[in-house]
Length: 421
Ligand SMILES: Cc1cc2nc3c(=O)[nH]c(=O)nc-3n(C[C@H](O)[C@H](O)[C@H](O)COP(=O)(O)OP(=O)(O)OC[C@H]3O[C@@H](n4cnc5c(N)ncnc54)[C@H](O)[C@@H]3O)c2cc1C
Image 1 (cartoon, helix red, strand yellow):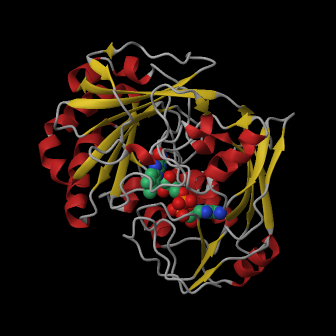
Image 2 (cartoon, helix red, strand yellow):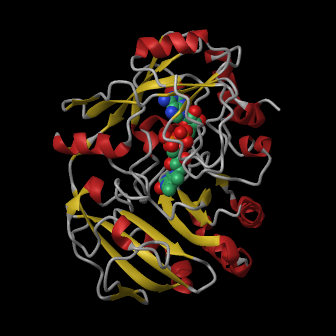
């Protein structure tokens, strides 16, 4: 058991846990879970809401053995749930393998990122959880349960993006592929009119594309992550769609040092050193911030951009930067991209919580009617029951929770607010 006061990465949530545990073996974890009245897992604490919170027992899994076992024939890797993507990626790369996608930062845990539907960007890339072919978790009574993609039924599809409510995930098996290189090019000054007219062209112009803007200034920065084996390493030209090739490294947030960012300027490098925007050994993003994000059907992107430009001046005082990405459809029940290709509209706000929540509500008033679903790990101004109602498989997930955890030992106020109020 540890004595440190647990807070999330952003510092806006102090967890109410009566006890925090850091088991060093799965057997110890099983004993803790079996003996607890109410228990939740904590990953690296990068979520901005109370999804990981509990007033009972909180368990961290970063003390468990850091297993990364590659099966080259099956093209899968089985990894310990508490590991950070940065470390998993290094092991995979050393073995000649890669993941298809990564989030903007590599510091987050595999189990926590998958549990919340975390994603990167790319027309062809679903979220990180779509790579999960199997998982092993400790059930509420302390037993080990294994779910696999090749088992009959679609239970695994319900159990990967599960907000920690079905079991404590000790291991995940992930799809992998041969290692590849990425060349990252940054453009500045893309007019927002051109972005709106040509969004499919912009977002489809590389393996992974991120667009950054503040909605009020009329321009955007575009990060193209080109896969050298499929896109080629070159750039689309010194000037492209009215934007200019950057004359030096950039940070997504204006005024911040690009030293924290992954290598740009088209220098080809390993997938895990280019797909995230931020290096593992630096503070990602700005550090003093809150975040929210909505995923919408991709076809709604132009209407969403017009709406955000209309309210740009209202949200500008608390907005550091907004990021636009694409996420391919998947079959995961609680995924915001469940069975629909999405545009993901992300907002890095200041840390002035009250003002930020007003701005989040203003954004949601525009984007929810276009089919927006909030990111599970970020802020929303919506009542939780209304968030659950946006997910077509919410009832199936309720039944899955009742099956895995009839007494609700793994649920917290956040999960109960979503599904049982
Ligand atoms: C600077 C920054 C940048 C970000 N960039 C992105 C991005 O590019 N794309 C994106 O989609 N999101 C992004 N996020 C959000 C982030 O990816 C999610 O909040 C994600 O959940 C973080 O993983 P974590 O390990 O910190 O999870 P935590 O916040 O610790 O936990 C999240 C949930 O996972 C559950 N959980 C954790 N471990 C386990 C386990 N072993 N078993 C069962 N349940 C578990 C917890 O109970 C909780 O419900 C960003 C966040 C920050 C702070």
